[in-house]
Length: 483
Image (tube, rainbow, N blue to C red; front, side, top):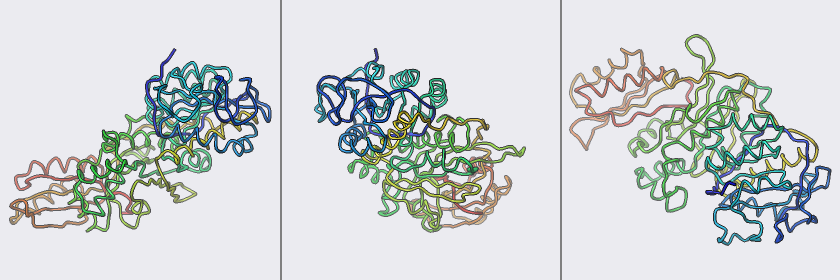
């Protein structure tokens, strides 16, 4: 028996697997431990024929879980018509039974495993987050042939293969749309709409907290700490913002996107990651001078290595983005994902990437798809990892650098600095020098042309050892250019 340890407020979907067995329930809540208040069944039974109820177990009732339950109740008739059968909430797994959640207390339980194991549960909606006991409960649901809709990006980024294999064995659907970009439909377009194309690049702003902070710094000229404090006050940043500002959240999402786009299983550990804590107001001002802005980007790209073989690059870092690029105009807590495909060309998906109702919208979309498959004996798209491409290391990636440094203000400094770039075959695109009022010397800002990241990194290491360089204050990449 597994006790529920926590609950989450984010969302998820995607699809893997198939089912052809039955369902149960009506949308709503019951006081007898059975199904719901909206609908007409009260026997806790099951079945898959048209008009038969399908039973739903909801794991977690935080911000997103609360909205999922609300939409299931408020839109019961419409959902039943779209699915071809009523949906019934069989139970809701929570951490604290004493908390008033606005539903019949008889629906609540702390035993997620027992809820999922019920014979009258056909679909499990997981919005409680965390790795364990969530992983164990989801695997047992899939092993029992129950469809799973999850919002758990951290779990998917680490255990996508295990979950996909379980869904395939049991012929059970696994959906996870809201795990990446809230209400923004990204997974299904990559998995289905572009299934006949070859995706080359997926680049996006997939974390609202960091985008809000960087947008505030650009708009108001705030330092990072000031912008973070305001984001926390407004509820855009958690009390502990580490997962967001250090890029862990975006890295998990990048792993999911890369896995789908390139038919290769990519884990969060495969994603190169840098956060935004080192971005300064001076960097923001310099970016503006170059007609750029700074965004935390999740980039998933098919690259060709030195031997002419394809590899998958997945990386997260703050980067300069030209103002003319579509992602540059995505401000505040909004998210956007930019896709380049061989035949479809450039596509962009934009909207609210977090929040209770937006994320619940994506969860409900997946729930409807899973329920339809049960009613009509259908199946969702299977996990696709046939390409099994190797993961590129960050040093192999061709990129451009923005390097800001403090130097002594004397003759010959620029040529000394430039020599470190040229000796590693890194070509300089632009140089700007500013008087450094905080120190005796000058602030030198350099943009490079494309070069292997390893060569650029070695150049920065060499610069730090020069006597004429007081410090290298900032190193960022420049993305979204054709140079």
